[in-house]
Image (tube, rainbow, N blue to C red; front, side, top):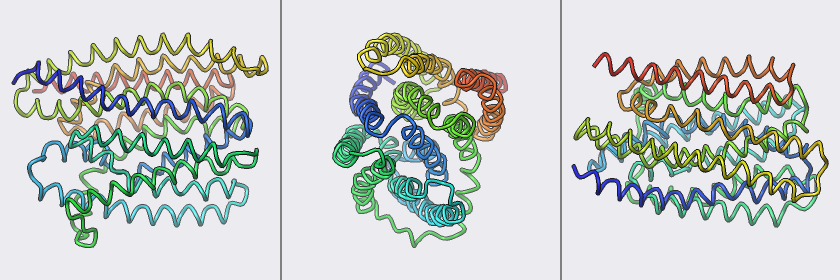
Length: 414
């Protein structure tokens, strides 16, 4: 196996996929200042809370496709029948879950009049978009050019619609809806292209196949759900304890972290399919590849953190905002350094997935989510926003240490 050729292709994939993710990173930086200036920081907090709710619910629609789906597609590229069957099962299950969750959400909103009905009901479009989302499939086939097109088109439509429609303070109710609508328009187009090419037939899937697939992917769903809870639930706790103003500030800080999480997603999505292929052919080459690529990853991430940290000071002082708001925004730069802790566990996380240790990952993630819920509540109650950030550091450190230990124990048992 020629690693130099692989590394060249890898660099090309990073550049191609990374350029699309640059648009993904740019969109919140274009959206947030505009929406905050028009609607206010409190409304931005409401938007952040609603977005987090639908991200968590979207995990049930994704189920295991973001990880195990990528593995299934990348490991069976030449087996069209296997790919067709997997697509049928995946999207049939997604449709069932979408209908169940949507009906439950509508009922919940009706019986809970205290919730922002328009914001959350319009936000249901986010779940529709998640049903159509084809990006996981293109990651499995390593078609990063196609992923770029999807990202650029969906974000361009979203930014355009926000600037055209959000004109008054009360228009904040449309922000989550516009994101869901933009994604739905673009995702559905590419979903139907995949459907036509691979002959997707949702009605051909038997209940037995669905049950088998659910049992197989359930542990990774618990893991993904736990990860989603400990990354998205803090803003809901802050909204409940401290109010919409501090939820809005937290959302700005989380935006910093999301920028670096998006970079790590690029790294993970490009490196994981190649790692799976290499491991199947030559274990030593695969481990060597994993070591090299992660050293480069952490070096680049450190550079990005330093740049973003100092650039944030420049931008914040250019806006005419109150000292309280300025101080709060500067405090949010503390979110940046969390990404380094997350990056440390990526190679070990990939190894556990490859070895089908989804149950171990699920247990670690579940414990992490519990620690987050308890620590974020009590620390935020006593130390406000400082407490919420401390709780994130505690949880990410706990998860990283546990994943590394689980991976090292796996190697000892081989």
